[in-house]
Image (tube, rainbow, N blue to C red; front, side, top):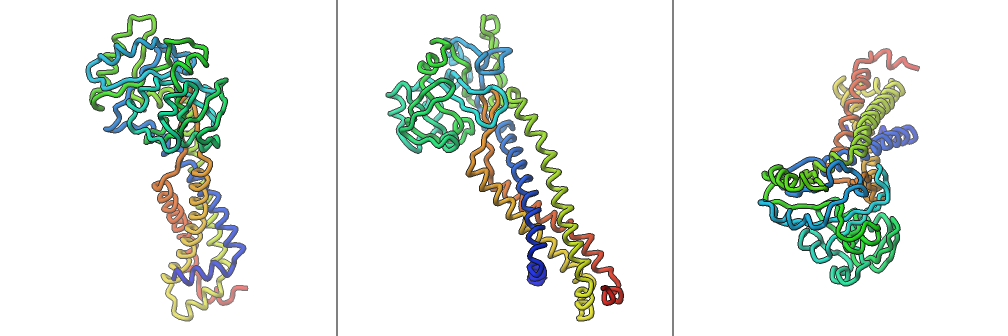
Length: 377
C-alpha cells in the first residue's frame, strides 16, 4: 500500500511538491519553536545535580548595576556546606533581550579551571591565557558565532582582547561567554579594583541549596551591600523575564504552524480524492475493499506529512546548528541548540498530522458510491 501510495503521489509531482513544501515550512517553524522551548527548559528546570548558587546585589538586575566587594569571597567560603566559590565581574554589550549578546566574565586566572573542572580547552592553551593579562578563553558557541579563532583579537563593549583559547563545557553559559582576567576587566570597564558583579558558589549537594543561600544573605544583610542568593537556574528564570516571556509567546506560533500543516495536508488529500474518483472506482471493481481504499488514501496523507515534515525538521536542525543563535538578557545567554529529541519529536508530529489530516478524505473516498464514481466527469 505504501508503494502504491508513493507512486500516486509522484504521478502529480507539482501538486505533491507544493504540498510538501508547505508542510516543510510549517514544520520548520514548529521545530524552531520546540528548540527554543526545550533550550529554555534546560536552563530553568532544576535537577538533582544542580549545586550552584549565584550571589547578586540585592534589588539589582542588570550586571552594570550590581556592585559587591570582592572581599566577600572569604566570608562566603567559610559558610558551612560551601565547597568552592569564585568572584565574577560581568561586562555585557546589551542588558535588554537581544539576539547578539557579547558577555565578558572576569575571573581570577588561577581559579577558573579549579572552580569549573568541566571546562575543556579544545584549541589554544590555558597556560597562554594565564600568562597574558589581556587574553580571553572564548566559549565554543561564542567563537563560532563571531568567527573567532585562537590568535585573533576582537573588541566589544570597549574592551580589546586576545583569543588565547577556545573552550567547551556542559554548562550552556560557559559556551557563550569570553573569560578574561578579573583585574583586567575591572580596569577596562572602569569600575575599579575590588568590586565584582556576583559570586558563583558550589555547595556540597542540591538538598542544602536553600539553607546555604539563607546563611550567605544573613551574613551581609546589615552590610552596605546586601545580597540576594538563589540557585543558578532560579536566578536565570527570575532575571531573564523578558526573554522567557518572548519565548513563551512563540508557543502560539508553534500551534499555528501545526494547524496550518493539518489544514494543508487535509486539503491536498481531499483534492487527490476528488480528482481520482474514476480510478478509485476501477480499484473497487478490481477487488479493493472500502477499507483498503481508505488505507491507500491514509498512506498518501502519511507520506505527504512525513516527507514534507522530514524536509522541514531536518532543515531547521541544520540551520540552527550552523547559525548558533543565542538569546541574551541582562548578561545571561540562552543557546538555541537543537537536539535529537527535537528531531524525533518533529518527525513524530509530522507523521501524526499526516495521519490525522487524511482520515476524513479517506472516509469520503471509501463511502463514495461505485456507480457515481464511474459516471464522474
